[in-house]
Length: 135
Image 1 (cartoon, rainbow, N blue to C red):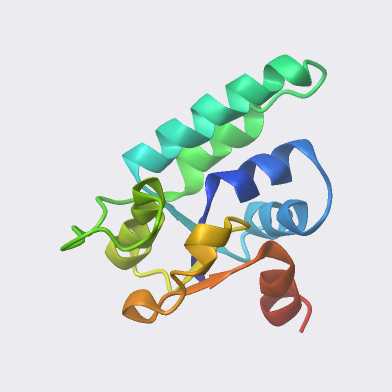
Image 2 (cartoon, rainbow, N blue to C red; image 1 turned 45 degrees about the vertical axis):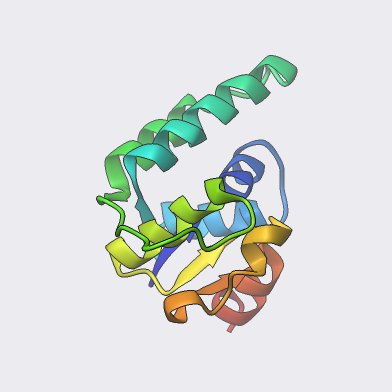
């Protein structure tokens, strides 16, 4: 199953436990395919390095390196107009469309409201784990 992770989910999975960690762990074990774009990779890296300043004992580099190597790096599909209230969230939908992912996992309320655009489900991490990983 191909998915796109919003930055907040990837970062939470690196630095904390819970559903985001479960999703990353499932991906690391090869049971999910992660789809990314150049803009998303840049945002993952920027936010992880900023957060590392607050948590210097945690090193995001191994997982960021793995994401860069093992994710499906695609060119996002152009969207005809802004879809989400926050135009910065559109990149996750464009990535899903361009990469053939049917699910975006996010905790962002504005992005969650975009669920259903082009038949893409935007699910919270907990809902994704419940519906797709615990069966």
